[in-house]
Length: 216
Ligand code: GAR
Figure 1 (spheres, rainbow, N blue to C red):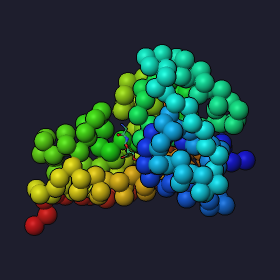
Figure 2 (figure 1 turned 180 degrees about the horizontal axis):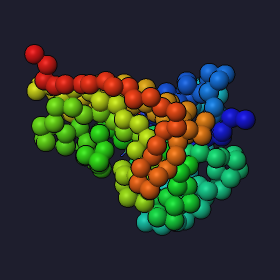
Figure 3 (figure 1 turned 135 degrees about the vertical axis):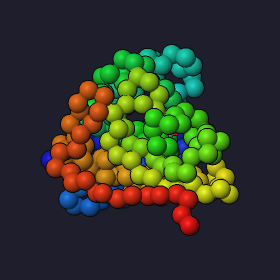
């Protein structure tokens, strides 16, 4: 049986689209049951509908700081669709600790940096200001702290001296679209094991790759 997944978005939804595409494969262990947005104008909604995926809009603005109130409606929508796993794809709303704990081990997020470096806003600007030579993207389990939690998968890119936040973001997003479906595949097929703050991957082989920057 395929695991039933909800993707939560607030905007463009390119990671959502990558997950939807991956889930079309007959042997993919998860199906996208619903895409939920907290903004009615999220461009990703149209993209999801065009792929034949059910969409739900739960505007978060009217809830203001009442995060628990918003989450009660969200939880009802998840129950209605019998959702087992959640993928956050650019979902720009913080959860209460209660909601994060309720879904612990069953909710993934993607962030465009090599966490624990550069959580929060403007990760590419943070990376460039820090002068790192490698950056990338991280898929992790969601915990109450923002952009933190056991790391499932990471992918790295080199950073060039003349990179801008935009050029770096363009390189990192291609990595995001590769690692998010793979991370969901691992979770949905039961290959992830939480061990305290760490996530282990059952049956994985060390890839042994290296990435060195700057090159010559
Ligand atoms: C992605 O780059 C994702 O990693 C980031 O928002 C973007 C959403 O793009 N998420 C965060 O920064 C979470 N802190 P998308 O809507 O095209 O997937």
